[in-house]
Length: 636
Image (tube, rainbow, N blue to C red; front, side, top):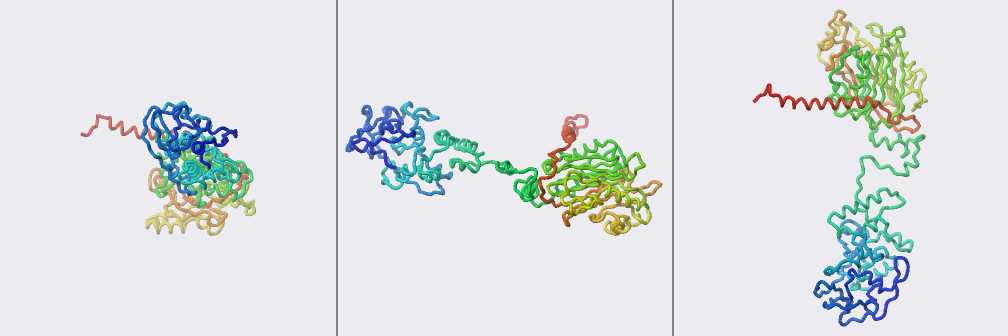
């Protein structure tokens, strides 16, 4: 860039210079507008050539300063000692480090505040430069008449300033410094051959540099620049001045605007990035593509009294983490079904919601899921089968609930088969009626229709869990079973299963075709005296049996893996002990063509459970305070 000292170093006026609006303006006017103080004057140094284009109104009595180009910079109200300013060292031309945080702090252009105000003569933060009160001279190392606007640096001038002149040329030094610091800003301008200008937000930020305001100005500058460019798309890159502003995103992945515009919520591909049920969305929640499922069954025997605490059932000590999905089936449920559902919600807490709950007579089923997973569930459908038609009270039968989670379809069935030691054929008939009578799925499409069988509902789903009071007994009588129960735990369980009717029928293939059961390592769950650990001591002397069971079936081999299979001996409000199973189930990505549940859950039940949980915690905190404030039984 040609030096502006030509107007002071020669006796003839230099040619007019273009302004920001494209008009020609005499150099003398531009120099007058760029002087930092109204009272300053240019005094020629002895030995220098007289200047015709840059004359002040009159000379000041203060001795002139010794400037290399014959320029005097004086202040009428302060005395300055003669000095010989040295030109600033030429910065290292490193493109990769031109705008990093360290280089930006190191290159402090002390005259940049005046540079940005030369076009309008005013500064947004300090007002007009010509109206300022005179202050003691501050030697910035650069003559004020050589100020160059950061917004008017054409590529051609930048090239000339970087190659022409020597190290003593003030204009060439400043040109090199500015071209190095704003190299990224001129990248687009070089290709277009036009002047590069800062965006409006960057002009405002650059006109008030942080080092002239306060120590915290840089952090404010970064936050302001980031807010201005945080929503810019790929078509408009953010300003390089905001390159060191670090955004703070939430744990959720940001959603691009083009994905929202192009995403199809009706027909999404299995592997498409925009599919709500696709592989990308599944990997965010389940990187290993497997979810934890809890399945429990319990025959309440119609007792009104509920256990004071359900932690042993829903949150067993063997499980380090809570499960993703909870499905609880009840036979001969309590009279207050709503109270039972509230207790389930209260135990699991606010991180879980009741996705669906239904009943068929005395059969109850509740499905609770983590609240951040409800958006990936389809509509929940249910169906019932009554195996005892004559009875007005539906105590025997089956209740099925099905839905699709991502691309995996689930079916949960809870049943109460015919009771009696020798009624094996009636229980087999109950099973046949159930698999044929459950009309599922309805509106939710089958994930693999070519593998489905119209005569068996369990073949229409990827994962099936069947649990309940199957009422299969142990053969051999009460005396033989009690003799086995006196043995060690490992030996007696295997010996008892040899007399189990269900195990024998499953080996024959007459019931639960294609199903499996986890290994049993617990004692028979039926029949106990209520509130005791002893088996039936009444006159009927019923044989202890494994009546409460959980079996599973997967359409794809290895999709369901049992983790824990046990009972809850601590819950003694019924003659049955609850039985539960923990499973790891493989989940596959799906298509967006399923009818979504749209986050539907039982909101009223959710609020009641939270209020109860909070009230109990308050009561527990109040008890120690009451004991501490009591003075009746004080131990000193």
